[in-house]
Image 1 (cartoon, rainbow, N blue to C red):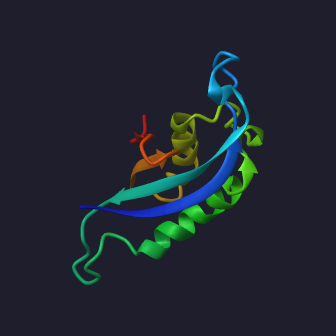
Image 2: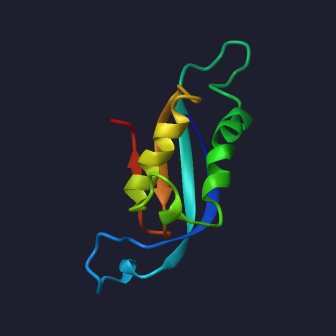
Length: 118
């Protein structure tokens, strides 16, 4: 079974590897949505895969690094595409949340990505 917990953060970024005339080459911001999905068996006694608050506790240190920051200045996010943000979160979250199965990033209502690890 899979469960998920969603989070939001506000951040500015620019994409340094696009042509200079591309709109994303300019500094801009997003209201990012992150969905952290974990997989596992439903506990016989608990009736759940994991306590949602445990997902929130695991993600909180990363959320504090991202929310209201300029993403390009964060080590590992010098080119902060949605794909790279998802991978950055996965690499830091998976060691403390071994049941992690997906990281979804939405930078707009209609655009985003889903990362399931390498």
